[in-house]
Image 1 (tube, rainbow, N blue to C red):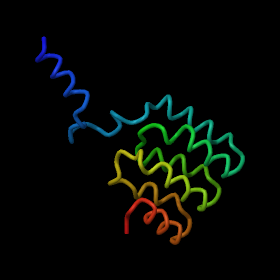
Image 2 (spheres, rainbow, N blue to C red):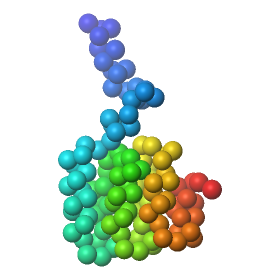
Image 3 (spheres, rainbow, N blue to C red):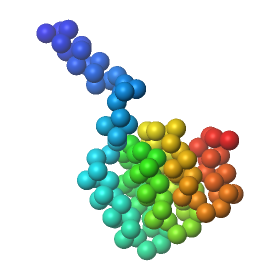
Length: 119
């Protein structure tokens, strides 16, 4: 029984295998849809940022889903602030280009890259 317990513990603590899809550990679609719909109900970027801080930044997100959240913001300034909040929860940073493509201005893209430690 001890070996079985140890195997179960290792399964819980082991990072996902490269062959596993990042979506397998990401926020479930139903939960993400709730967050996205709630974010869309916020009228101003300040409220949207607060919403992201309170709800979206508490769960793992793919860059694709983070981009969907960022598209709800009206201005790049709000998007940059949201990227700073969301970046620790991004599970597929190799797809960060999805996030960067939500920005209108190159200077905002550069600021977002800098905020998450990219060049």
